[in-house]
Length: 323
Image (cartoon, rainbow, N blue to C red):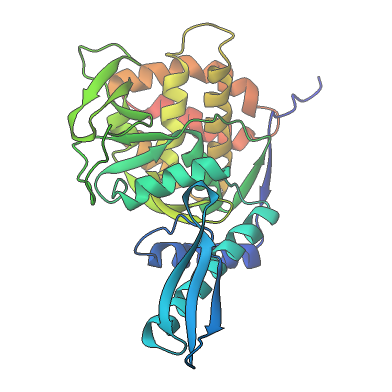
């Protein structure tokens, strides 16, 4: 009997690459605010009455060229801006290098959305990035690349309690997609109000479990490195196994995406931190265990051929967990 081929391939980043990623994380988390504009350059020009004056030249909203006056060349403001510009260019170069080296990145428009959320204090105020964007960030932090990378174009933010914003909301409120835990009386994926953001959100089953344990990592964009909070990998893995059984329709492509992401993380965690799966399984509710067991035959088909040890790890924690 031929061995079933896995639907994904894993590649571990070499230690030197992870050292570069660690440096990028340090730079990203040192930012007090994500600068949304391209870095631009500093121009120093003579004046008719003598002396030289400095300007920060770069493109602003609607690609309009802006010139910010910095005072006399060599002034404190000029030198501070030179240092700030060097930092922005360093971050842009790091983001470019990480993309070239195979780290997961998001497209520019999505990076700008996530950066705006970061600046508003979403991720320090109780918001958690989930979904495909979080999955890519988790892979980077674990030091792996997965091919193919199944994803969507959404930017999904979750919260357990009211988010405390660092800046006031603009008129119109929070327009992006937000996910919140579903109440026992609510249907999965129903819409509920989120008063603090002047918005509505989609309920996600067992979201309280998913974001009950999170960590800080970064999103890699075209020009940006953005600090975010994401679910712990083991909880993300088991949550995907659970929600796959709740999807409607046998041919629903989101079921395959859920199971492939769960399988990828199971394979990685088996190699890097198998104890994390045990710890995450201890927090599963009885209802979640039942749903995970329903999904198990399908993930068994994905992992049995090339990742049997990871499959047995999942089998062990699911079967040993009380329902």
